[in-house]
Length: 323
Length: 140
Image (cartoon, rainbow over all chains, first blue to last red; front, side, top):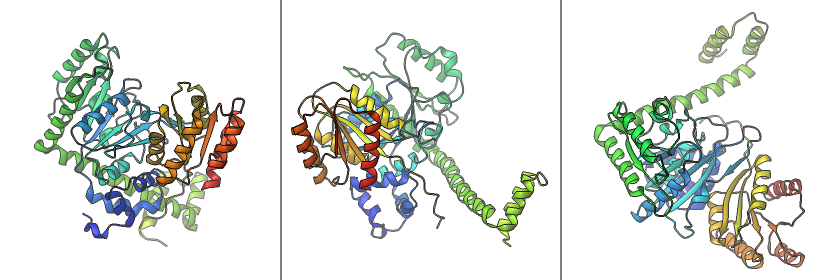
């Protein structure tokens, strides 16, 4: 845990006190990997970990943005404040991006209980950006009761949201495929809730039935049986309160079963190892470039006199006993 | 402390919005696409935005630039209002450019009021992209 609030850096203090401009700028710095926000990020960690982080994922065009908007409306009517991150893909060719998740957001120009941030994936695979997790934490530290994350329109293996969200909603629509599709590995394995959106369309009952059969084959390894809810966001909306109730039911299950703590342990250990790996990797790169002995080692590998695995062993050993 | 990370070149973030009531957003979409292809992150806010909504989106999204498209003729009311709100809410430094059907005399007055560039029909995408880039680099 971090120390008392009196010891927070100025920027962190401003974020906690609800300064949205500072929040927005800090998010940009986090996205850009700006090292000057390291201290802020570290100092705010102690203020995170309580808000439900709800992932909304599913193939493109199933209505994720409209559902996010509907959930925001539901949460506001319950008096809950909401931070939203909407992720869209970056071009693998130019790095550019059109971020369009905001279009579906209802007009809330005066409502300080909602904060919406669009993020480009910036080359990350898996449906979210590298910085999405930290941005969710910033939103939580800024005091939002709930954080919603809309992923990139996902393919079958885009499951990175699982490492960020406490509850994952997988959104589908009628006629996405037959019941064998629901058996396939990947996306359907991470659903805590299946949301059959556009439930007013023909085929919705079949989609729900296929998912029910899937769930009946066995729930998640945690013992949670994924809920299935039909929704529509066109007037009159259908199923939105039920969808949120299912999220709350899952959050309650996490607490009562001890799964929240287990899941957090798993997620955080992989985050820590990932960060440490980056850190060590940068140091090793530096060493390989600067240390003359190691540069000669590289020369030997280039000349095929030493193999890369042996060189890696020496690089690591050299790291422990420099010189 | 960790060593400084290798500095990455951050993409330009730009908000594209259509204030007012006309529903013709083809121009805004074409420009959004061109800015995307120039490597920018374009937050597309869509049609019929009020000045309040545009400024709020610009600040939440922490954009480097705002592009406004308008064909309704209401630019003399809406653009100055957007500039005023930006000033009031701490977004004074964000450059704003515009495109649409804007008579020359209005364009002169809007530029005086603080709109940094105005593009009419016939402007090339290349010109718009280059101007957008230079507006951001001049203001940073």
